[in-house]
Image (cartoon, rainbow, N blue to C red; front, side, top):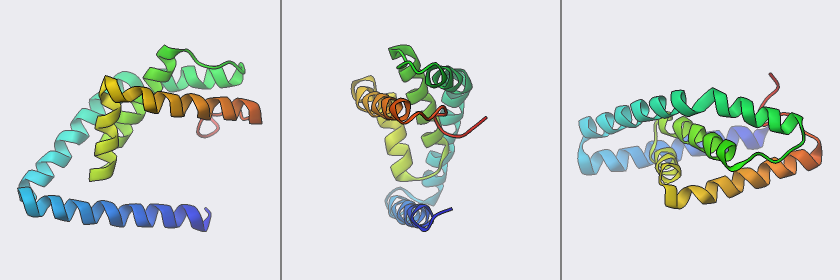
Length: 131
């Protein structure tokens, strides 16, 4: 693992912990823990309903060198929202909730579509990791 990836995760974790302490100062520790558990449950439900099926469809589109349709992009972004909501933290929960809102979801779908197009032009056959 490269130093940049390690630094990214270390700084991200520190930012999340700092923001969680600020939030717990405003709404109490018990309410903060309850909020974390609530977003975990919501993310788990979303991940189960949108998860593996749409990532497999995304893999198929990459292998066949075709740009995925709107349904596949929507499903993949919703599965990503579930992953963000399962991860405890303020920033990840905010991104997960923004993906859930249909009015802001198009931004994330556009980012995903451009990422897939770049992977197709580079010849990558996998969206995240090899099977």
